[in-house]
Image 1 (tube, rainbow, N blue to C red):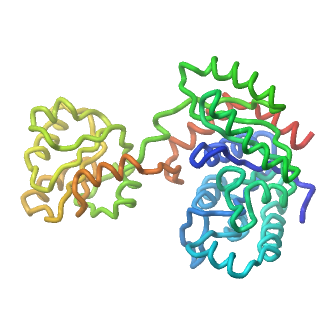
Image 2 (image 1 turned 30 degrees about the vertical axis):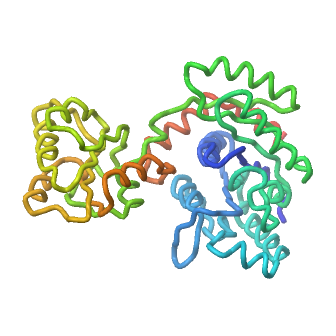
Image 3 (image 1 turned 90 degrees about the horizontal axis):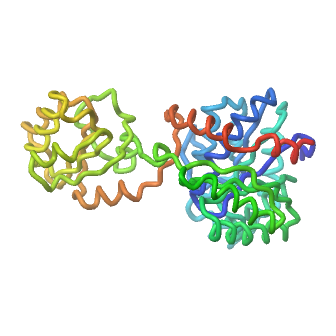
Length: 366
């Protein structure tokens, strides 16, 4: 396997701590220093099907953003499909999987000056099939960046747990990035995280401030996750949802509540709320909305469909009830998508402003 090309492995202390954010931001920043930057996610768990192949969705994102010029199966070599673990435990094939990772890395690093490797969770994820993140980093002969969530005590405790497993595999952690820090606590977190990490022999690489925009789901993502039916044609399919409003009030009260970025969830028979929203947009009382989801087992009637047809924002229909829809939207894991150009630009800007990329390069490619 190629051991010459500089590479770094991105791991996290927990799921959804910011590995993909770090991969996006670091890849963008490295392109200021290197002509060709590659990417690989050796073990993927959230999969999409492309050309009859199961590919990790983060790999698809990185490829579309950075045009990696590499076959997708080489930057997403191992797909953890349903029953993968059961099959592995019944008939271990570790040598095959390790060779597949080595071969994929050789292809992903071909003619590249640097490769960003993204893990699939904390250090121990994948241990059940003998490919923990710590083990995969070892296989790739890569040093590691750990990403953790804003705070001091709990994040550093979790960093130390992960550090132990990487050390067991003989893998060096070059530093820690603290993600999702409340803006008003940035100076405090930077000062004391730096001190706390130093006591553990770890470098503080930077802190990224919490950005609500990155946590807001788009209407297109909600429609996809709910398998909801579109009821109108709208050019605002990617509107971000900043507020969820359950339609359990009168039209007058709704006009006071519905703000820019609001998603109204209401039963299919609440024509009064639909009329109020439409009139509020027209007269300027409501600046804009993210959209409406009509709910219930009884589909909207023709009169309702006529009301939503000309609304500027997306209107969807789900057979689920309002409470279930609201709960699903609330619990939705918001992943960056290739179409989220504003979010991607924000991540790249934040990374350049708040992370010591020179320190990363010096540690990996002195």
